[in-house]
Length: 267
Ligand SMILES: C[S@@+](CC[C@H](N)C(=O)[O-])C[C@H]1O[C@@H](n2cnc3c(N)ncnc32)[C@H](O)[C@@H]1O
Image 1 (tube, rainbow, N blue to C red):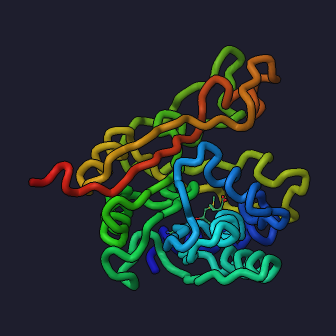
Image 2 (cartoon, rainbow, N blue to C red):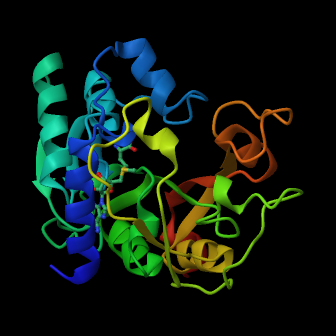
């Protein structure tokens, strides 16, 4: 395990102990709400019987949602603490999950063409090189399979309420691919339960827009949809410096839907 992985193991252990939002399992799902939470536009079609890899997706949320829809679900996550949340959620619903501790940059335990769907919630920015992950995803995904991932909007990564200057949010960091960015978590990630002990800063890496788009193209992905995600509903009247205000002005996340079609580009 390298320093990048070690940092995240420690951090996610502390985040799980502090019950941060991404570590809270979804325990009130049914088939209908599982579909709404994963795929409100119903782009996935029938999921039952599909082989799904929830990549760096521990915490007991998307994994059980797919399982409730009848998919065969594997979860790979670096954090044992997060995988325990998946195990709790699986036992709550009495569903099976294949839970594996591992790094998203190394999927060598899986053969080629192993999955129909790769579901990759926010985590790509925890590793310095997005292309390494795209290469692995392409290798284990079946032709025609779906790759869904969320990542930081590359122009805004690290921007927070602290950057409100009185008349705008100040961009201070250079726009460089792979640049390390550390920042204190925003308080919303703890909901209303602030941690007893301070948690080490969030350490992320910028992936520029050209890296994201060209990195997908190089591996034979066809982008089906790209959306920007806010924190809840945009609220331009919100108090400056709050997540509602910041994200109404600058959506922090991008969501990509891509399909693996290597033959479109290669003759
Ligand atoms: C924001 S959470 C995303 C998943 C969560 N289910 C959710 O709904 O938000 C990020 C996850 O990435 C995992 N992670 C961080 N670095 C990783 C790595 N190098 N390989 C695999 N998982 C990693 C963390 O342990 C954490 O569970």
